[in-house]
Length: 189
Image 1 (spheres, helix red, strand yellow):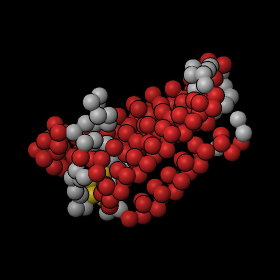
Image 2: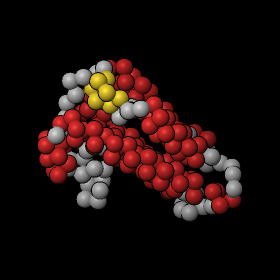
Image 3: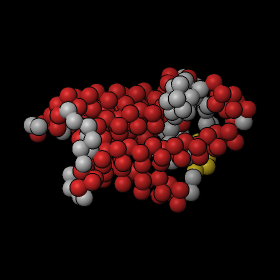
């Protein structure tokens, strides 16, 4: 592959991270935040996901090709990454000042049910998982599948913690919202 098209996925992720950093400057103050240990465990898993996605060396089994396709596979991967990142940005905008990188209850926290939150309780995670799936598909190797699986587990555990906190914060309103929406993937989960 030529150098610039191969870097397209990395550029999409960098633009997304830039948006995320700027958007993080305008959040409400925290009323309650998860423990540092819990946050560190999640961040550690995300670092492993990132390393797996960018690794080009290592044991042969980690580099084994699972999905053939060259440019076709890569083009599909770029579409998935772009769609996932755009979806997560839409969700982040809908969440507004209630967003936090850690499991948090904000001062004046709102139960947001607009935009993608109308149907999915964790649409940022949905978008990020779609983008990670596309990132793993780009190379079509075992390390991409492992990265996606680890991210799915880490975000799933974080979503469960958030749901517990939101149930305590909003009570029956959140229970009703859970019954009327999907956690991550419509019609699946």
